[in-house]
Each structure stands twice: as C-alpha cells, then as structure tokens.
Length: 300
Image 1 (spheres, rainbow, N blue to C red):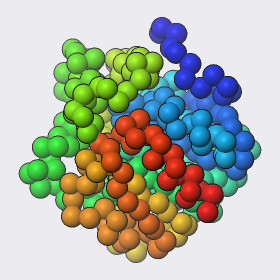
Image 2: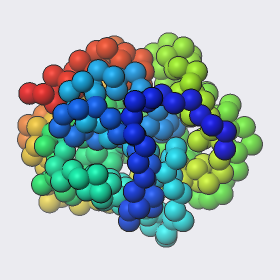
Image 3: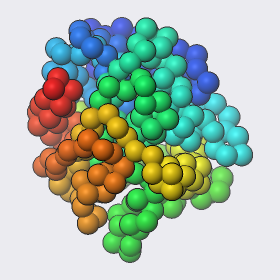
C-alpha cells in the first residue's frame, strides 16, 4: 500500500485489538476525550479540516471504522458482524477503554453517525454528549424511502445486494465509483470540497477488494441487522438520554425528508439541531461552521 499524506502531523498513532478487529486511530489535542467517527466512502481523514480547532478544546480520538482506512477487515458472519453497528460500537468502546477513556463525548458522520447513536443506545453510561452529522436513524431512513429519496440514496439498495455483485461491479472501476459518489453528494456536485491529500486516503481505501467487501457488508447490515436493532428499540421506546446535537447539510440526505429534528426528537430526550450550508460532507464543505457548532455543543 502506498505511503499516504499525514493529515494529522502532531497526532499520535494508535491501534487496538477489539471484538470488531484491530482498530486504527489518530490521537491528539488537549482536554476531555472526543471520539470522531467517519462515514462511507471515507476514512478518518475526513475530519482533518475541523481537527485543529477541535484539538484546542478536546483530546481527539479519530478512528477508522472496521473495514475502512487502516483498520482490519474481519471476515463477516451470516448476520454481517462485525459490520453491524452494534458490533462496531462495541469495538469503539473497547478502543476508548484501551486509551484510558471510560467516558467520552462522541460525534459521527454518515455510517459513523449510525455507529455513534447505536453506541449511545447500547452503552449509555459511557457517552456524555452525542453529535450526529447528516443522518437520521436507520429505521427512519428506510421508512422514508419514497422514489425521490431512493434515487438519491440508491447506494443503500445497491451495496446491500448479495455478494459478490456490488463488489465485482465497484472493483472494475473503483476510482470512478468513489469520485462519482463523493461529487454527487456535495452541494457543488464536484470534488472541489476535498483536499487532494484526503482524496488519496479515500482512493486507497476504496480500491482494496477486502475493503470494498467490508463497505458492502456495512450496508447489508444496515438493511437487516441494524434495521432490526432500531425497530426493537423503537418498539421498546428506548431513547438517547444524554444531550444530543443533530446537524445536517442543507443539501444532504436528511434535508430531503419532512424534518430531521422532528425525527430525532422521537429518539432522543434532549436534542437540538439545525442545517448547515453544505451537501453531505459538512466537515469538509463547511469546516468553520461545523467546528464552531461542535465546539459550542461539546463545551456547554
């Protein structure tokens, strides 16, 4: 694998063996711990534009999800573990414990946001505050799938198809698929929001067959196991009880629904939120406003 640009030059590198495989993370900054989780089709590199400001207030743990970036690619089981969000969340709790953090704040974007809210539901004692970026709960997204949203989020259905169909199609032109995906989810509909060094990280990760498979397993879990976990929580009226901030892009996926904040208020007892002028990738498309919102929330 080629040597990739270092987007966190003053951060330490850590790995931890967890129940979800070996997890890679960059750690830096000063203050209370804040775990940052990326989404698809990216890596921990996506936080690089907001990390310097956040690191002035928090000790950042910026992890690669299982199967992504430099984390391991464990063999999936019949229920798509460890790529279901419950398994990923358990692995992230174990990572933080390895680093000496029994309690922490948490923010996740896209798939990382799904890991983050699942972690908060499953391990409420360890999370002080939760922020999600451009997501709604998985069960709510499936329920909201009308024709307009399904066309915009076609990858939910495509990546969840049985192996090896999506893996083989993506592996034929991985850079084309990655770049089209990234560009189409931005407000500008191009790659101008992304630092070339970050794109190097994304291309390298998204071109490896084992990681392409992991990405698909992530979405297969989303259509099955993750959906079942959400539905069970909804039926049991389980809620997120720590303070929560929901941010979404004005041109992102949740913004296409009837109301992201109204949805989250069915899942969390103390939630606030708003749109940020952005497409799906808030920390890269609008890093100043995103960092300011996160700092204000986590320092409150």
